[in-house]
Image (cartoon, rainbow, N blue to C red; front, side, top):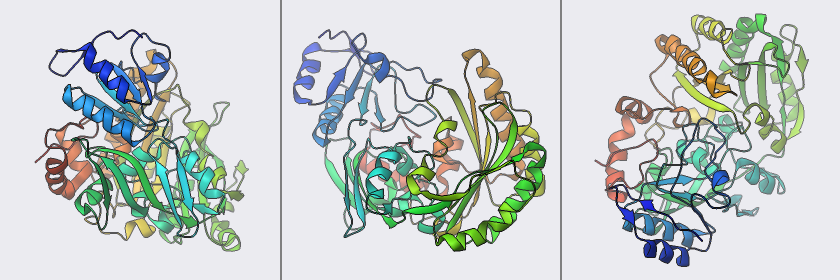
Length: 461
């Protein structure tokens, strides 16, 4: 197999015998530029990300992760870690260095007696749902089934079940983590508890999480679907949605989105998920369903995996993506007007503005209990710009930035990690808030050289 040259962060060529020795200790697949499969291995769902790693190491288990970490550290290589590859900022890849690719590590074991699930770091939400649903269980995680469980969890994890059962990080019992020095550590409430705290919302700063142990919940069927209204009704629909959610029970999570139908018609959609008794869900959703004159109402009892995959088509592989977000304490009438006005100016029919309401069980956790600090900010305005042609990049990026700028007077200056597109110090401070100093101390303890830095980076204290 051709070896070629691998350059470390100091510009020196890594010796061929070092690479060959690594390949003999690695049981997965090692892919180099020019080899079969390389072009596919260096691509993720966001086509705007175009990076060329020196090696993609597709791990088969924890021992492979350890071998890859040790090889990269000993040869001073830049390292990126890929789980599901769904991070919009492209941090699953790096130029010239080593990608530790977990996508082949999809093992899942569900223990119905203890209501737990052990999930490997390369699994997607769809993988998890498939296994847990067989037992009538679900792990609270996300809204798109192709999302990787690892990146979503390390960033906090918001999804259809969060108002009832908390964020994804509130349902992690332990992390099996490979640290920068090649150790395999269990992080839990009773073991390496400082690392356990940091991994629940601190991103990929502290190691490679090879597997997660989650608490699962009895959720088999939910009441969910899509309500679609004509775009001219958007202001009224958003106000109705806001007022309903202020008094909604924890069993109801719902989002609204200003988007386009497949034929290009601008509409406003409401996507509810009720995870309690179906008859009570019908009563709770009745005011929403009877409001106005919807073009479509598909709300019905659904298996939870069907709810989780409902929005997959809106976030396909192969589009260019650029996202922004604005977390807010309130959703005022003025903010609604700004949202609708800018939605009507979007350049691409693939783009959208999503209004997400959190709160519930997730909002009753103190911001200092986990690394995720923004528990008391229930509104997040997500601005995913999507388009097909590279020639359209400038105008679509400008549109997304324009929406975020217009919402700044209403914003609390906070961010979700999953929507971060830049890593300047002010943005990192806003993302981690008051928890940043503690995170920096834990970073110093477990990764003093900032080995793991292709992420929303926390510098060691």
